[in-house]
Every structure is written in structure tokens, then in C-alpha cells.
Image (tube, rainbow, N blue to C red; front, side):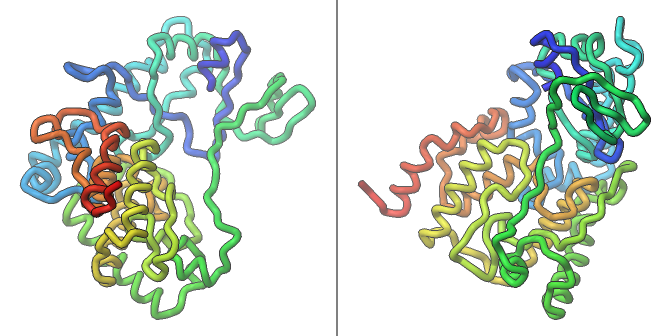
Length: 363
């Protein structure tokens, strides 16, 4: 938004509110080897092995990377190098002809931990364009006038248009408190029945200990903001299905990096679920799976995972799980290609045909 506004010849001021997550860490876009860009490389099944996930298939490779001193040390170095590459590309303090406020974009966000906003610098001239043309302010807005914005430090910025990139909050005001609790949507803890509170508190405590045993690196996150979350975590199987009501599903609740592939996989899973072609685990197992997902979300994404539905770096394992439970495999590419080829929404192009053939709905 900022870059494109400058390219259209506009005079741009970028206001980053102090009570938010701060400036974003912009990762580099160029790919290496066979990959056209870094997004392609990150969308292979090889890359996610370095990112803890409740949907990750367990095995010797996961144990090597996440539960040995060699693997953990390699992972720490990988995290450091990824963050440093973003800082080096931006050159916040040394970029030639940068405006004085450009250095205020220097971020403390860690990509692995997702402790703040993440982005991709997709244009070769991105940083020069921002550094040489954009005035950066890390302040809150205190008031607005007809043709200006007043910051909390008294600075007044002339403006004709205010563009907001502040996100949104998911809410379901049409459900009663009782329905919200029953469906497993985030709700006030005091709305729980006592027995439910005891059950989920015990499950979450045990799940957190198991998460730290499976992924010891998550015990020591970097400094980060920990927002207060006045609600329970999401208590739905696969972030989609309530345990107490098979007549409804919630698509789009999970926070995942690629909404295209995720939306397609969730739609396929939901179709199979309503058709009776998803075999749900026993209730106790489903509750444990949800608690483990919630606990990992909280430890994996310490600044934003408390609601238990953050799966930002878990795109591949999550969508694989959904299609596997629907009984589908046409999206897989074969042994070697499965490891090295990017996973895209177009991988599901044959899913409908496979579904109809597998579940005997021939036309």
C-alpha cells in the first residue's frame, strides 16, 4: 500500500501505532536454485520440517531436527540467519539517501516466532522507494482535522486521504453465550460450566508439557508482546468442526499463511464431513488433539497464538491432514517431487474427480 502509493506519485507518510506490533520484518523475495522466489522454496514439504506443528507427521527427521542438540542448534542458527537477511536487505541505518525517519522502520520481529508483522519485499526498488520518499512516524493518532492528522506527540501531518491497514476482529454476535460455549468458539472463561473448565484446563496443561517435550526450542521465545486474551481458546477439531454439533462448520477460522490453498482444503474437508466420509476420532482423542493444537499455537506464536487457532507456518501439514482425512491423495506429487516441489492451490485440481470416484458418487 505504501509502495504503490509512492509509485503513483503521492506524498506518503507511514504511521505505525505504538500500541500495535511495530514495524514489519520484510523478508527477501529472490529464490535460490530451482525456485523462482523464496515463497516457492518455503511452500515445499521439506521446508516445513523446520517449523513445529501439531499437524506434522512424526518420525526420525522431526526427532533429529527438534529433539537433538545438533538439530536445535542448527535451527537456532537458521532462525538468526533468516532474521538477519531481512535486516541486511533493508539496511535501516546505512541506506544511501534515506530520509532520517527511515531507520524507525528497524524491527525487532522474529520471522520464526512471528512476534510481529511479516511481509515480503517483492520489488527490486522497494527499499530505495520507501527510504527516499516516505516519512515514517511510530506514534498513535490522537485526533484528525479536515486536512491533517494529529499524532500523540503533537506532530501534525497534512493529509488528503487516510488508508488503514489495521486488520479486523472475528466475532459472531448472532450466537448466544450458551451457543458460543457449546460450539467451542472463544468465550469468556466464566461462561464455562465448572466441569468443562476443569477438563480443558487439565488438557491444556498436559498438552503444553507435551509440546515442550516434542519441541524444546519453544520453551525459550525471544522478547515479545503478550497481549491479554480475555477468552478461551478455539475448541474445534481441525479449527473447523465443533465437537457437540455436527450440523455446522466454521471455515476460515484458522490463521494460515496462504488462504487460497487453505480455503480449498477446508471446503473439501467440510464436504466430506457432511457426507459422512470423515471418520472423526473418539471424543477424548479429539479433545486431546484440540488441546495440543491450542498449546502449540500459544507456544509457537507467543505474540498472537493464545486463541489456539494460529497455524501461520503450518500450511502444508494442515492442508495435508484435511485431505488425508477426506481420503484423498491426488494432490501428492510422488516421492521426490513431494519433497521439493511447491505446494499450491492448483494441486487440488483433480480432487473433485477423485472424491466422486472414491466415494462412489459417479456421474
